[in-house]
Amino acid sequence: LLFHVQSRICAALIASAIFKKYLYFSPTVDMRDKFQIQALEFETYAGMLIDQ
Image (cartoon, rainbow, N blue to C red; front, side, top):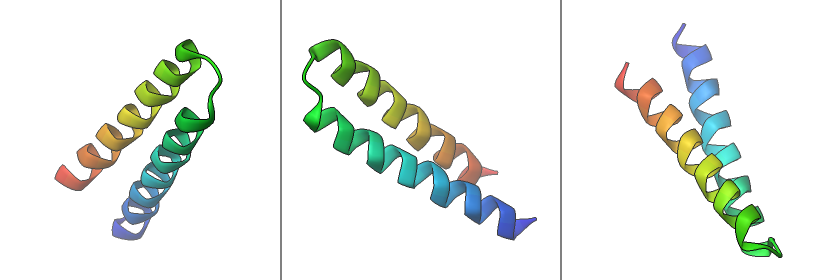
């Protein structure tokens, strides 16, 4: 069980990092906002997994 949780945490943090990179290269403000929100949601998800 712990192995699967670690994988999910890593995947969520990697996804967050990817969205943060996309946010800086996005040509429109609307897309930047969406990428920022997605990054925050993945960080929150990773935090929830750590707290379990």
